[in-house]
Image 1 (cartoon, rainbow, N blue to C red):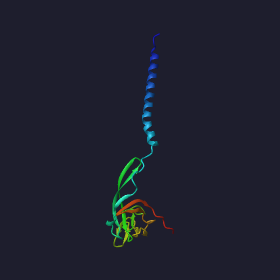
Image 2 (spheres, helix red, strand yellow; image 1 turned 90 degrees about the horizontal axis):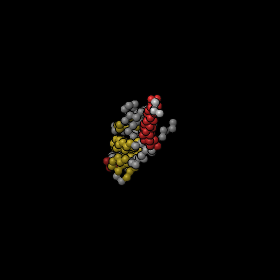
Image 3 (cartoon, rainbow, N blue to C red; image 1 turned 180 degrees about the vertical axis):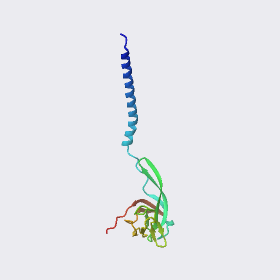
Length: 169
């Protein structure tokens, strides 16, 4: 018995439906596997040390803050960025080193050292800090943030910043 026109249309429709479902499955598979791997894979561990070389100890004058710049590599998931960073570094009388973050603790403005007044001054809202980082005046709620510091031979190494405890009133 010869095929009817309706039978051919049904077979063609069934074939096209199967092709479309097959293409949708292939697209879903092609995008789903990479998405699953991205979501379930662990990001790279930071193989770089958190410590950065900030220069030679002999280049720092005793008792006078000096602004130094250095490069720090930061790992953010799979992306590694090299960023310029800055610190105010003071070589103390006992040859120890103190390093401060360059941002005011009030609203994050960059402060400067005023050698005439022997204090750090923030130009944005008038906060002033002593050479030890303590608040002298202004709206700053806490002392300056400090970098972890270690000395290895003649080199100064800076770690991450630490926020000091807020003084009890």
